[in-house]
Length: 152
Image 1: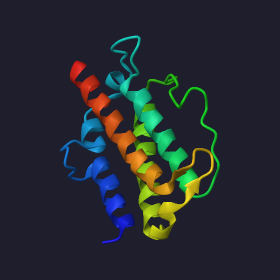
Image 2 (image 1 turned 45 degrees about the vertical axis):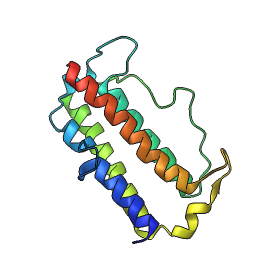
Image 3 (image 1 turned 90 degrees about the vertical axis):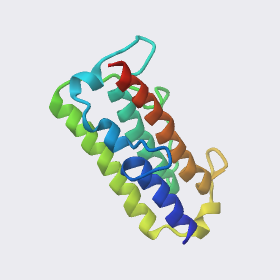
Image 4 (image 1 turned 30 degrees about the vertical axis):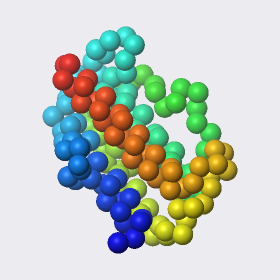
């Protein structure tokens, strides 16, 4: 199996597969409604919804990087307050998360293992590091979502 396929499998498993950690984004978020996602447990903590939107934006950011774009990360690091707390807006965020997964799945179809050693100029990290980094990022925030969900 190619390294690209291994990374793709890891990424997919964290979203809605059967990862070693036995927790996925899709299953964890499945029964969270808009009110729960929007609820601020503590003023110093992000909401589930803010974390989901943060994940979506970072997934887009890294995908664009490994497609050759130079991206400037905003000062807010993609943590922005949710303006519309409606159920429809929450469903849109969940759909955007799913679309980001579909975009990554499509990317991995044609990605060449030889490109894993390419360097992203803005931070001198390889594409390999970026690909594993976005998986680590998803897992890190998945853990936060799991904890916040338990506190609801």
